[in-house]
Structures are given as structure tokens and as C-alpha cells.
Amino acid sequence: MERISLNQLGSMIVLFLIGSSSLFLLASDADRDAWLAVIVGMLCGLIILWGVNLTLYRLMPQRSLIEIIFELLGKPLGYVVSLSYVIYFCYKSVRNVREFGDLMIMYLLPNTPLTTLILFICLLSAYTVFHGVDVLFRMAEAVLPLVIIIYLILFLLVAGSGLLHFENLSPVLEDGFMPVWDAAFPELISFPFGEIILFLMFWKYTEQTAGMVSFTIKCFLFSGLFITFTNVFIFAALGSLAGTVTIPLMQITNLIDFARFLERIDPMVALLLFTGVFFKLTAYYFGAVLALSQMFKWHSKYVIVLIGAVIFLGSLLFRNYMEHIWFGFRYNVKYHFPVFQILFPLLLLTLAIIKKRWSEKVHAE
Image (cartoon, rainbow, N blue to C red):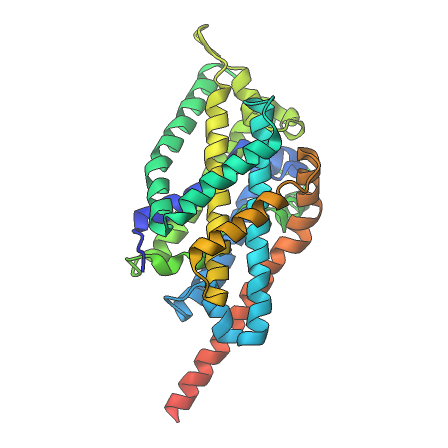
């Protein structure tokens, strides 16, 4: 079986959670308190990660999510729930592929047909998946330092251009805590913090199981605090306009005029965007391939083609970028995603605890 190191796992978790979320103003409904909503969402996500996902992994180590489902639910119901997760992973990849294609047309290749871009993205992702878990995670380990460096350069350039006005963040909690809570739950658990459920497909490949749990939590917290910082950064620069711009960080970099010679560095933001989205869509693609392969014991190379075709066709169903965004925030993050990120994991954890206690009782007798 393929193996990944803790550093590779941590790099993938950070790239996956940050993805493209740090480029946007999350929880914009909370206005200037959006950064507080991100912290609340991160803490709720941490409770789910530590109390549910990692506890489930500790109770049933060296098993993937699909293997856990079959062991706890049996074959008939196991097939139904597992297939639901395959569809969920595919849909999440579809959303990221479509976002990648639409934003590529908006900012870099306006005259390129969307179908061509999406086909190219799917082929590139399929090529990565074909080479295995260790290759994808080694890529993450190599790319993460470059991503962090680019972010740091952007932050320093914005600060050096005098664009930050931290008075935009005050007063704090002017309308009380409820707007912050409403903006955080369940939206910020669904995106991005609850998405960590995918790693139940990958934790079994970690070679150093002893420190995996604590290291995963540290990487999760780093990602959450990084997203919180970028939310503060975006609102300090744009104020109330931050919630009306498609990609706020792109808008900020368009305003950079450092020392009267360094400007128009939005390609750096585009690079961050495409890197984050690519790793996220590929991780979900890989999760769907692993899940379907483990369900039916099919060879992964055939599943890669099948899942790739589903993702390619599914990404063309949205009429435009705004429809894809509207549908996601109107329905997915509130009603659909919590089923896979909270409800099913809680059910599985309950069954795992009951099974363990029953087994201990039988052995005791």
C-alpha cells in the first residue's frame, strides 16, 4: 500500500482547506465581523474534526471512510451510503472544476472555449490521480512553501502601498453575536471546515500514525487562522465593498502601486487561485475514485476514466458562474453538505462506539 509522510499529509490539508477560500470574503453577511464568523466556523469545524472524524478513525484505524461504512452498516445499506459519498465527492470536484474554468476565462483566457478548458483540467487531474496518492501528496509538499511565499509577498505589497485601514473593522459586534453565528453556521462548516471529512479516505495511508491526530489538528488550526487573517486583510483594505466584489483579493492587488513601479500583480493572485482549486478538485476526484474502487473492487484505472467523465459532464451543467455560486450558497452549504459532513459521520461514530462497547462486553463475559 502507498504511504505518505506527516509533512505531506499536513501540506495537503493546508492546501485543501485554504484552496480558494482565502481569496474571498467568507461570511460576508456578518459584514465587518466576518473574521469573527470565520473563527466561530473554525472552532465548530474543530469540534467535528476532533470529536467525530478523528475519533472515528481512532476507533477503526487503517480503514477508509468506505471501509468503515461497510463494516458498520453492512452491504445493502453500505452500498447506498457509500454511493452517496461517491456522488458527493464528484459533485464537490465538479464545482471546483467549473470554478477553475470560469475564473480562467474571466481573468486569463477570455477567448478560450469553456469546454476546452474544462477538458484540459480534467485530463490534468486524471493524470495526477493515475499516479497515486503518494504523488499527489508529494506535490502538495513541494507547492505549499511557494504558495505561502506568494501570499506573504502580496500581503507585504498591499501593506506597503498604504491600502490597509483597520478602522474598517470597528466597531466589533455592533449588532451583537447572532449575525456572526448565523453567518458561521452551517455555511462555514460546510465550506471550508467541514470538508475535512474527505481525509477519512486518506488518513489510512499515513506512515506515522502515532502523531497523525495532533498534527492534523495543528494543520487545521493553521489553515483556519490563515483564512481568518486574509478575511481581516480583505475587509481592512476594501471595507464594505469587500462583500460586493467577485474576488476581493484580486481587486486589492489591482490597487497596488508600490514605490511607483510595481503594480498589476493580479497574475500572482490568479496563480494562487488556480493552485488552490486544482489541489482541491483533484483531492475530491481521488476520493471518488478510491471510494468507487473500494465499493466494487474495480481496478482504479477504469474508475479514473468513469469518474473523470462524470466530473467533465457535470461541470458543464451550470449555465454560468453566478448560477453555480448561487446554487451552492442557497442550497448546498445549508442543506446538502451538512448531511455528509455532520449527520452521516455522527451516525457512524455512534455505531462504532456501540460496536466497541458490545465487543468489550462480550470479551468480558
